[in-house]
Image 1 (tube, rainbow, N blue to C red):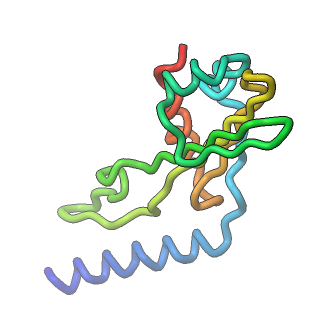
Image 2 (image 1 turned 90 degrees about the vertical axis):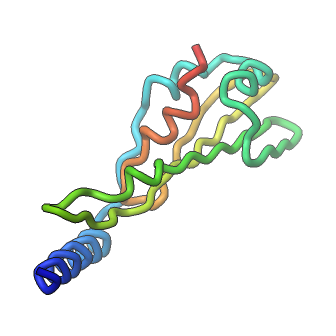
Length: 128
């Protein structure tokens, strides 16, 4: 029984490593919440998305950087009577503001091979 569990875990880890090593970056498309915030003011974004992890400004634009990581329970998948760990993932969302209005929102997945758009979309769930 223990040996079978160990084999299952090792097989799962081997599959993850082989998939991660040959995977291409996930496609970052356009998502509903991402598009919904374009045109909003800085104060509206801060009110609905909260305080960013980082904020930078130059003479032309302001960047608000948010990060959201998948919940811990999402990181394991059940297999038979046990489970194995999946890839820890999250998403960076960068809100680009010009003249106090959102002109763009860019998503960057972590790791880049995993589509974590749902993590970024959750940042803006309360932005209507």
